[in-house]
Image 1 (spheres, rainbow, N blue to C red):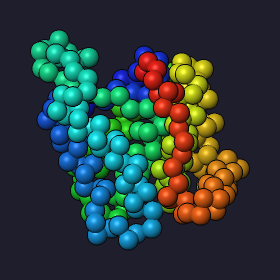
Image 2 (image 1 turned 135 degrees about the vertical axis):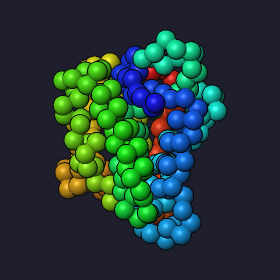
Image 3 (image 1 turned 90 degrees about the horizontal axis):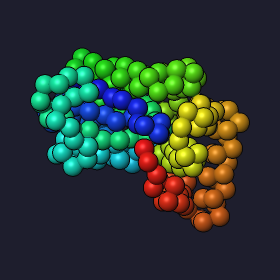
Image 4 (image 1 turned 90 degrees about the vertical axis):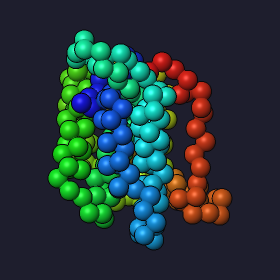
Length: 224
């Protein structure tokens, strides 16, 4: 069974499952990105960039190349479990992008059930880590994000780096909902980042989607 727990420092979650569980989830995720036939759809490649990072970590975890345990957190029965860490920001954005792409690709009840299962465990991890901070964050699991944003990946990168710069802990977690307001269509925060990206694109004589944010990699070198 796939389940999640919050990381100790509150920067995100650990997603756990048997190798079969993770491979099954990987196969489902793979249906909703990187389809060459959908490449002409505006914003599709942007969402590919976003989902690819999540998919990559999921695949590596299914090989046992990330976190491993001799048993799950909920049983003493010795069945090997594998897992990986992903930030709150990245997983929330990934769910939003996958749900958006589901509208473009045929899905079945198994796909829907798996995403609902994953959302349930993400919500549980939020509440387990800090019920106060979770209250304001939960709407972003439920379509508050403007997933039709053609630059969703850059928005994720911006918010993720800002969140990591807060260094974790419940105080930082409770600030995340405010940071996530940047994802809500037509808020001041949303428009400010859009205007900044457009200004940067004009300055560098390129398209917004071709911009690269200059993240300081050292902010990610902290305990999860």
